[in-house]
Image (cartoon, rainbow, N blue to C red; front, side, top):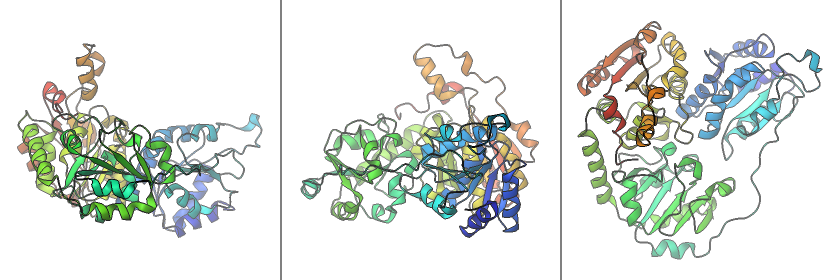
Length: 514
């Protein structure tokens, strides 16, 4: 890239349709002017942190590149929460900001900040206009294993982060691999997000053994299939299928299973192997794998696992028990997820922010494909639900998106709903309202700490969201939620539903699950 005009042409040639963010009066404005002439649409956000998340939502929905944009200094620092969330969630987004050249005299460097130091731990690479990588190279860098954000400074000689490379040491051990597989009677698969990137969905669907996924990898195996065992977190309690099935297994086969995709990475009680990319080797610690197997052996292992059959009856029984017991409890998010499934039958994209309701959603929402699931499953980053949903809906208007948020997370990016209203996006936002930071309240109660700091005295957002022109309704029962969802005309634009729960019932709704 030699200049802004060439960057714009390269972005358009790379099929970028949307850029999100807040521009300044310098090179970012010049870039937007050039992009507009090339039919690339700019979506102005209300907070820079929303921009990378909206770009990420589009990547999940359509696997198409987009970018986020900000000014230097405070604009980039405002964008950091979104970049960090994309780093944790492995979203390959490109972030762009104005920047001050490293040679600029300090006396004239208004808003100067060390971008390299700021971004070092949450981006894969840091480039500027003088680099010959090209925008297609930036996308390739972001999408390469392990995916993540890559930053571009709109100047020619900024300080930079050298692109991180995985170690070249061979840490793989294939000794006794086939005998271990052949001797196993009750193997279990746990698929991480790497299985999505390796396009394992078809192979996993053809197995007849229990297949778990990490929360972030939901949909890697169609969760309506009998052998789909649900999420593996490492901390499942008696009602979570992982507790019983892991006790029965005689072999665990991980597919890109890494420690930051589960809540607790601990050694398995039976032999275990992990199929990994070289970049995953350092992140496979904690599970006590007896063997790390290179990705080149993936097909061989899956073929061997196809000869095995067990666990289907157990999975069906465990899922039925989980659903029956959660729905038998007082009105909770479990009943809302039941209604979503009943009304949309898997044809709506589901977004889960973070909180107690996510525990229930991860176990009860049956996700068919990865593109139908938006979450902060690796980072548990609070507040990402709304911008992810809006970004997905902008890129894919044919699919309704239902995103669930909690009392603690709705306020962070609520202003972005104005854009959803203006564009009449097919987005339904459901606030799971208990008037507390519910999951934290449970911890406070168990330790007999004060709950005063966790109480929300004015929990309703209905009047605020109504001012955006969005239909906003309070619901106090399962029937009301069902009626609202069935009457929602997606073509009319966004819908906001505030579902009210008894605080104590909500706090205890995840009992015996996690």
